[in-house]
Image (cartoon, one colour):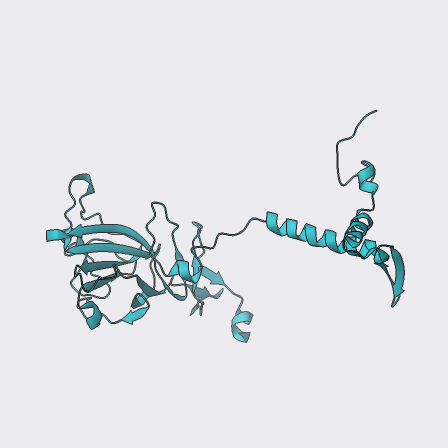
Length: 284
């Protein structure tokens, strides 16, 4: 006798496919819970609609619940660890971190891509925190832990709690050389700050190629003080106004987009121009 391969789509593949599973499952469950009186299957009409009662109804509900659970359990889950609020407000140190594309305005941390201590007894700690893998419109508020901090014209945090031991420089991603001034401190650049202070030598030595072209980042310098940093290094985050995106009509006029804060971490190319019909702009 030839045996056909099992296929749940075949109407007569084997006897299992013809077993009234719902009724059988319902009967077993009702008998197990002491409700055998309801185990008889019946058809009743309600409002012109014929429905099952008893064992078939109970069995059908159980099968639906089980199959729904199984389908949900087997569905791949999107890993959004870096996208939730706690994941955004930390600074990770990874060898191959995803590149962030920021649209709209949002507070976030970033990826620490450089870490060096210099000076006598490692007095200074230098840290670069990349906030976005592209030029941004601006980096506005600086947060230390969860408090907004004011910076003076030299980049020092002015709050007495930090005793001028933290200095923050900003690059918006439009820098093209190590001598380009930081966005928030005139006359200061990578060449006359980090590169000049670095003690790395040989192949690791910083030079004029250490620029970070196309990256928006913070260069944070900490001056060691056992009382100021009694609890360790604080978490530095920032409010980022993301990509310079515009709506462009077919005629070519540009309009700003009122985007909510959004971060894309996939390495995909994203169109920078959104084309919208004139009628949409007129009726918006």
